[in-house]
Length: 201
Image (cartoon, rainbow, N blue to C red; front, side, top):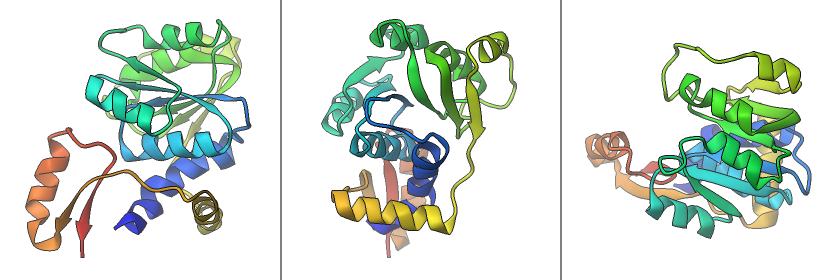
């Protein structure tokens, strides 16, 4: 079941941080939410020696993020200007990398969180496709935006070696037997999951 998480969510997070981001020890990574790519990114950032700021609107999930290694957690409902909050948490310098899964509704905050020369990995568009944000900070802060769509076989092989060496365990919320596939989708759509929902074959 854990292996099922690697070929999409895992390798996407790996490509985001390790290949495109070139994350280094001492970097600060901002991960949005508790979806599977964000959780893998949190774990990969930690094994790379980075500091992680993680967001959620659920206090329960924020506690889980701490257990997964998040150094600082921010409730984005309690702190609507969470991009600026992330900047404050880095002594005004901003984060090195943002795992951006929201799209238009969160991108302006991610830009605000980024330091000069920072990197935003645009992975998802959970807030839709209509895009209205101020582009000037991208230019003035020389922020690099990468559109990420999974990774290569070589990326996956590198990731698996790192997972084995660090004994990393994927976050799985719940498993379902194949005959309960409808319930699995209902559980996923309820948006109460943490990490991945997997089918047991």
